Image (cartoon, rainbow, N blue to C red; front, side, top):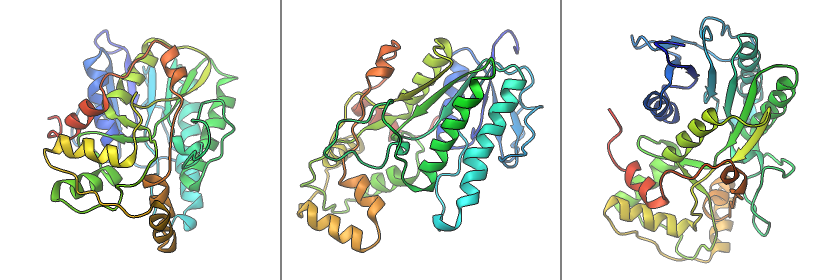
Length: 313
C-alpha cells in the first residue's frame, strides 16, 4: 500500500500502451509504479534497464499488490536472426518477473500477450476462442505462447493469480506502427487499393484494453485464465479505413483491385504479413470476456475519435 492505495507495477510504462495504462490505473484508485528503461526524474518510476532471465526485480516489487506486464520485444528488422532475443525478453524475462512477483507476495499478475498466439488469420474458420489449440506464427507470437505456458505452470505452485490478455491491433492516441502509418496515409489522401476486400477483423481501442485490465484487477477469477479482448464491432479493412477517415475529417481514397491480385503482389514482394493484416480475416469470439461482466468502454467510432486527438498531457 502507498498512501492507503494498492500498488501496481506497470512494465513497459513509457510505451504507447504503458502510458495509457498507467494513467488509467492511477485514475481508478491504484498507486502506480512505472518500470522504465531510462529515468526521467519522476518519483513513481523504477529503472529496469533490460528485461531477461537474470533481471533483478526485488526492489521494484516491494509492497506491490499487482503487476501489469506490457514490456516485450515486438519487432526486429531481421527476425530470423533474433531467436535468442525474443526468447530472452518475451519468454524468460516474463517468467523471471512472474517468479519474482510470486516470491514477493504479489496477488495478481496480468500478462498482455497477443492474438498472434492463435495465428495471423482465421480465414474460412470459426472465430478464434480461448480454448483453441494455439498455432502461433512468427517468433513474436511463438515467444508469447511459450510465456503463457510457463506462466500457467508457475501459478500452479504459487499463491499468485495470473490473467493472460490476447489483444488484436491496439489503436489509440499516440499509437505507432501500422495504425500510425494507416492514419498518415488516410490524412494525406494516399489512394489505397483495398476497396474490394471482404473480410472481418477485430481491433481494440486502448480505452477498452485499459478498462478490461482494471476490471480484471477488481474482479479476479480463476487461478490462471486467458481472454481474447477486442472492440465489440468487428469490421472489414475498407470499413475500418472509412471510419478512420471520418474521425480524421477527411474522405477515404479507396480503389478496387481483385483481392487475389493484391494478395499475389504482396506475397511476391515478400509482404505476406501485411497481406494477412489487410486482406485476411481475424474474427474473435468475445463471449468469455463478456461473461466476466466486462463491456467495452467505447465503441469503434468513439475509439477512433479519441485516437486522433492529441495525446493526454
